Length: 253
Image (cartoon, rainbow, N blue to C red; front, side, top):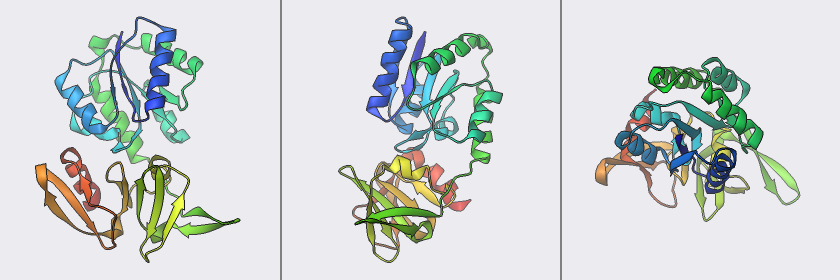
């Protein structure tokens, strides 16, 4: 069986690969892809594998964007920390999921389910597209406050005050509209899962930006887009060519 792993966390990807080899040494992992951009390119240039493992949250956005940019013509086992509504959607569509961190017994169960799945020639890529649309349509996430550690206290910070969140050198800073900067012990991936996707966008590996902080946009080299905010930022916010249409759709919805 030939498979690919779409996962941006190196340790998680290696753990999954090691588990697959222990369960079935005949499984051939063709590629480990850490981003939407690389995944789209791989599916566009290669024969579909028998199975794909796909993390829902990647550093450059939701892996659901892959389905909007190319055809994923193979069954998918998602790795996810999503809420119950999404898990039920996966069950209804007969596409399995694994909660992270992935455990051996859960992986064995998912592989067994895959082997009982309809033969590959009967696989319908439209089913995956329908699943993705269903989950996105029912996506309900979004906190109203973060708790910021300050000395021996936890200070509430209203999400409405956040202009952008920036990651550099494994440090994450939350920047507000009034110029405050707060450090928080969480990754951009972890924070993005807690934000309202209608009001915040994962621009790239370093930035999450608020809709109401966007001043305008400029065309950038290689058909990329530079997003300008109403507040000062440490460096330019660049949207890659493959994600420009996704960003424009999000901003104009």
